[in-house]
Amino acid sequence: MKAGNQRAEVVKTIHSTEVVVIGAGAVGCSIAYWLAKRGKDVALVDRGGPGAGTSMATSGLVWSSYKEPYTYMELNLRSSLLWPKMVEELGEDVELRQDRGGVKLCLTEEDYINLEALAERQRRSPLFKGRMLSPQEVFELQPGVSRQIVGALWSPHDGDANPIKWVFALVRGCKRLGVKIMRDAEVTGFDLDESNRVKGVFTSRGRIETEYAVNAGGAWAGRLAEMVGVTLGLYASRGQMLVSEPAPIVCPTPMSILRQVPDGHFHMGVTYEGEGFEASSTLEAAEQLAKNAIKMVPLARNLSVIRHFAGLRPMPRDGLPFLGPIPHVPGYYVAVSHSGNTLSAIHGKIISDLIVDGHTDVPIADYDPLRFDERGKGEGHL
Image 1: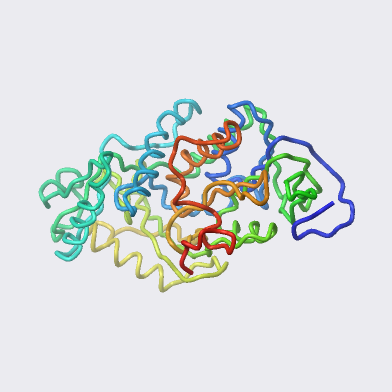
Image 2: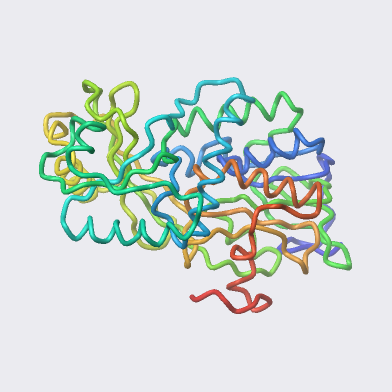
């Protein structure tokens, strides 16, 4: 027995399956769902339970327009376009809104100039259909926004959804397809044979025999990669958000940073804070988030906050996903990124393509999991 970061004594095998997906957030659940619907026997394991990590503490955007470079925007856009098909397959209302597009406000002339330049760069892609809006055009979409804005970037492909409903719709879809879901099963190492090939996953509940292991561990994916001797350029970043009491619908169009959901609540976000696994909320962040919300939507000044929460995001150091196989550990795959809610749909397709077909038609060369590792091409920058 050759074990990655695992003691050498014999550990009881509690289950046998073709694929173990580690991490039951939106990304892991989507991967398990895609693999199962393509005929694979799958176990989905999580250190807590489905959706218990970042997926419970996300803004819920399904967004692509201002993600760079344009090739990364295309990946997000392709994922956004997969969402309606998956929602229809799952047969559940996850509050997906894509019919009005989405807006990112410009509060200053500088904001407008910067977003206009970004939109011009994104037009290198034939898929990009975004454009700049005048203040009057914004008011027609979003009657409740401040009359001090100078415009916005609008994209017909941007939108949002309820991230909690999305995860649990995927979980129920997985169950219907026979995926074994294992809660409270923290991964402690990987069982590798003499050629370094995956033959099992060690968990706090015992060993799972498998041919493939998919690291979809979100903020903890770096630690899971270290167990097979791989360095990901990844860190955990705290993000805080506020949720208001319900209010009359004055912002019916999905909007980044501040969005009003169909039941009237405003979701006010979001902070990007340092590196580490501290996930407590702070008064300073709450004050800043409320101040920013009031600048965008004056009505927010009169609303009570009913929830303040923090979560940990996986943040690649170059902003791009880690997506694909680890060649020197056959059977080991990585799927982790910021924007996991948006990208969950396409991550599921890509990993299922790689495991079932051995290749994918989605360009992923820029997302090499080894780009920060000494075995990679040295293209990452720490």
